[in-house]
Image (cartoon, rainbow, N blue to C red; front, side, top):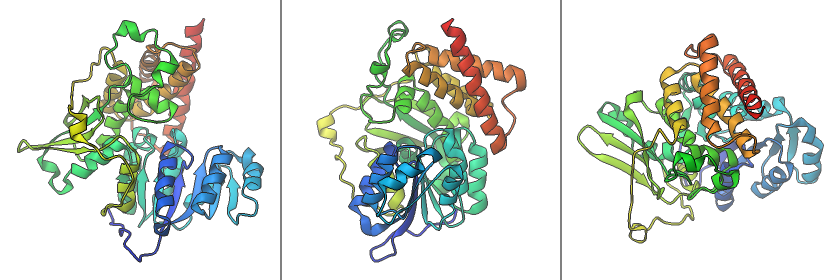
Length: 401
């Protein structure tokens, strides 16, 4: 990959585009930019439909333009930013136009498959892509990484686990790596039996013990599906085989990732569970920048514990590992089915154990009908995404009757 020059004192500000500005990643990013205004020139902020939050952030970060994906909210955004000097646009075409603007850094943090097209379009020579949208790699990892290689853009992982691995993975010694281990907190139901989890409520599932995240990723953490997605992502980000990827349940969320080398060395990255740390690492790489996160006090923490994941109680992780091995469209179908199933659970339509049950049924049906292991183009990925959503909703509707 082409190296992107790190920011240094006296250097020109980093021209920055943020996709998914009003989400949890965007909010953490905004905090860092506000504390270092001389380092960043915010070219564009892109959000889905939260006009109020986007307008507020655009003013605080002195953005040049603010863009909403929902074109029906164009006038509302315009009124909110009236007199600010910040240009306003809305709609899918406006989002794609925003990523065409001159920039050094693009933060890809749009949630869901909706982030695939704009993030792919943002990959250009000389750019740094700080990636927080997991669907780009889960649904279209081969295509996404091919685009990165073709353009020579620099890809840095924002997700805390992948960023941790990136920090301790010696790329020039990849042939000496024995195993990558991603850690999972285990979520709120780590010690619950299958029988106890049958009566889990959305409110209980949304109480993550360590992290403050959006609703879907919090539920995915409770089922361990999120860790499955992260393993799929890691298979694209790092030059290792599927057999070299593993998961450790680590309730304290202090160790975010580990790399085992052939000489027996086990390198780990540790830190407090605060997304500003991996975000700042991507923004300043290969340098470090000061971030006011709580420092990890190992003496106060006292104990770090680890255990193997239980695929019997958390079958979602097993489904993700199988989809990774199948390749092709299987991960895209997995992601789409999960999103619909999670929405149904949050609305009270299905029970917590129905989330992996729905996903498994949809994957089996789609694979039996058309096969899921074939390689895909972006258009195929998006079409499969829609089909998997439709089939999942059909399964849910049948479950209700």
